[in-house]
Image (cartoon, rainbow, N blue to C red; front, top):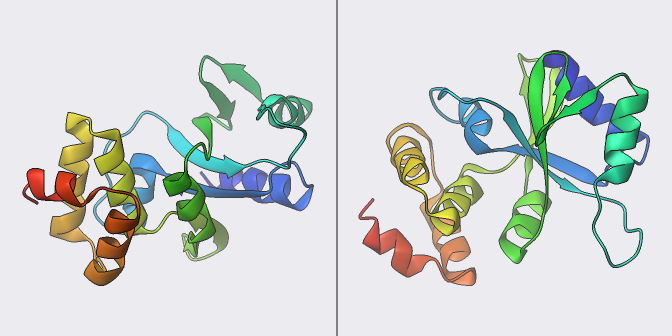
Length: 165
């Protein structure tokens, strides 16, 4: 994981990525007990190169560093990493509001706030997302006022109530 984070940080320094933040199940370890996951979800903002968002420059830069794509992921030092562009207003906001955290008290990395992770789970709506929201509610420190603002902004208040969390 350390090498992955160092690689992500160097991609930002080199201008390949505009911004990144860890999301998905791996982000849970920064707020609550870790949950099992197959890959590392990394939400990204790419430098603009026209109207079409393409991951090609990112994949090219990773290939030059010796990392190869394997299906939807790039294997970086044995860790499958899935790069996900911020494709909607919620994800764009989540990236802007991401928090810098230290991994193992030494490597800086960006992580989506727990409140945004909850909102993204609600928006995605899978059963495992419902379980993840329950996990966050039981284990993480959530700023409920901040969460309510996100839910209202992105039309997720009703779903929050339907899930009865």
